[in-house]
Image 1: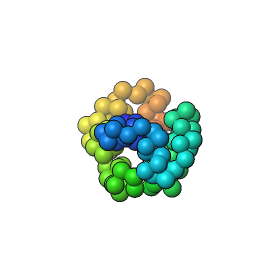
Image 2: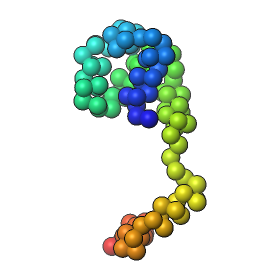
Image 3: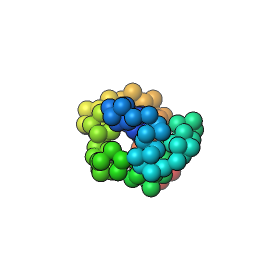
Length: 101
């Protein structure tokens, strides 16, 4: 889930239009429309204003995203991903991890 998708989800849960969210967050409607049109990530100040309108802290906003799509971190997942690489890709990854060429 992207930041914009999560904003949309929270906005729709409240039954708000983009204009309602802009008013609640004290942002211009064009600020929000530009995010959607460009598919851009909002600036931190914009995201803070949006979270304020939703009545949630930034930490909760990002925790919800992480819980919806946790990053792979289990050793088994890492091993499977590395095993799927070609020998050349594995060597390149090892070089990258060691920090040298």
